[in-house]
Length: 236
Length: 324
Image (cartoon, rainbow over all chains, first blue to last red; front, side):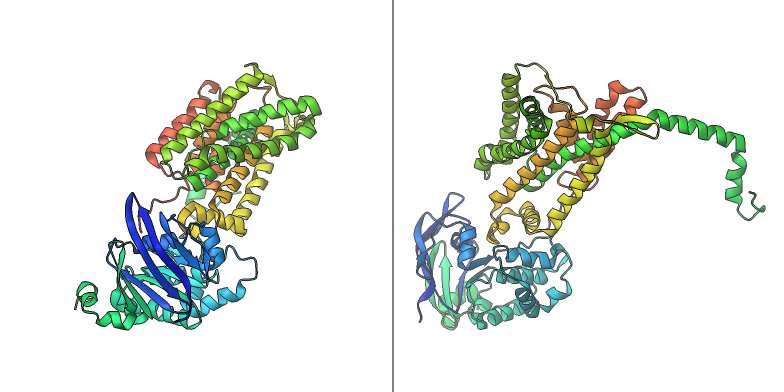
């Protein structure tokens, strides 16, 4: 395994006065898809929010490419090359599809035309709806837009918080195909999912999180066959 | 001109209703009515423009922070006082840029000192802070002026009198609506076609996601305040040119009316605030023309109550969508 691009050590995060993340450590190797699965309230989202700088961790460190980025502000984190696709997509409903993509590239000063075309190639549906307000898109299209918007900052690591949430199974499959496609193009992905089956099938590496702690880790395929994971998350 | 019977029964009926002499008389009355009321109409359009420039400040700040910035009317008053003092020392033409810049700095400072530390506090706390700033500005003004009305300097260029359709008025009356519309168009272009404008629209919808895009929300919010205060400074120059003096509570009434205009148009919407302001300005002045001066202020607030009861979101208000 190559040196991890993102390394988290003993991270603790408080959320609403409760310790949501109780000291987790995880490595995200460069160029891989890593998934963090777990039930609702296990602390997955808090972990991502801490990495992206939206909340300050109470203790622990986050290292990106060997540099300590703990408790930096969100703008710096995006500049470094980590973006978060937030839970519930959170696209800007009044901005057009194209503007949503341009907001994604907010910090970039160079020409972004090529990147917009690249996103349109990945998601031809977005190109058709380029001038439509983001709020008029369907759930699946909004998720595509949220991913496309995150790609516009040319990140090195893209973190996704429950991309399959509230989407039809067929659409979910489409989203996961896209995740694999982006990964093939060299992007490192940290994926949070409740849909453990899909996530573990897609990921190279998986972590299982329970009430703020990591209880299991290993290659995605191995976790799929692990008895306790099966019982708790796969329902088989 | 006659219509063949049966070809246009409706037109014919109207034609036969108005005999020639009757129409002439009516037309005369009409033109009398217009020339008697034109000054009021012009004044109304002008007042409307001044309210609009203040109302935009309310509506933009509300759009981005969901805060009714009660201090905005007082910022407007301070701009008036700065004009009084600087103009006395250096003359009106030097004072104009000083007023504009210092008002923008004041807006920036108020946001940094009184609102930014409360970013994650409940909205009520920020509102109370705004009320505090409002009183602070009024009391500072009271201290500096000693409570005496300060004579507002005449800006010679704006005070020139012009005659339009037989009505004589100050040039400021004609300049106000034109300048207002130009500024609003520039502002709309800025909001809809620049990167900063896009960031403003993004931040007004969702702080957190905007941060995830790398937008520095504090600088976007500061920019919003600075723009609002810039327009209030221009509004103040135009507004006080019509009045003789500035007192510490001078910002109260125009501020309140601009606020009503913003609510009327749908708070958060810039075109709404502008249209609301013009409607209020015109109605108010026409009421003065009809001899109902005593009720012209009351009218504005009755209008506020009616809107809040009938259409709380205003003319262009955003629909409340709870879809997640």
